[in-house]
Amino acid sequence: MNQDLLADIWNVLGERIPEKDKQDAATEFVNLLLDYDIAESTLEGMLGIDTYLDTAIEYALEDEPGEHNEWDD
Image: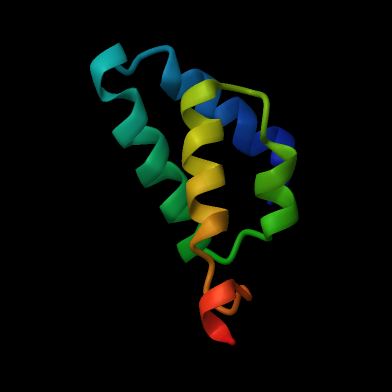
C-alpha cells in the first residue's frame, strides 16, 4: 500500500478523533498496518505527518522482532 494513501487515511481519521484518544488510535492504526505486513520503509516514510503517529511508529519499529540489541550477546 502506498504511504501517501495511508497518510491521507490517517489525516482524515485523525481530524475526527478526540485529542484524548489520538495516541491510542495511532498505536492501533500502526499495529493494524504491521498486521497487514506493511513494510517498515513505508511506515518510516510516514514519519513527520503527525506527532501521535510518529510516536506510534517509532515505538512499533523499536519493538520489531529480530532486531539486534545489546541483550542478544
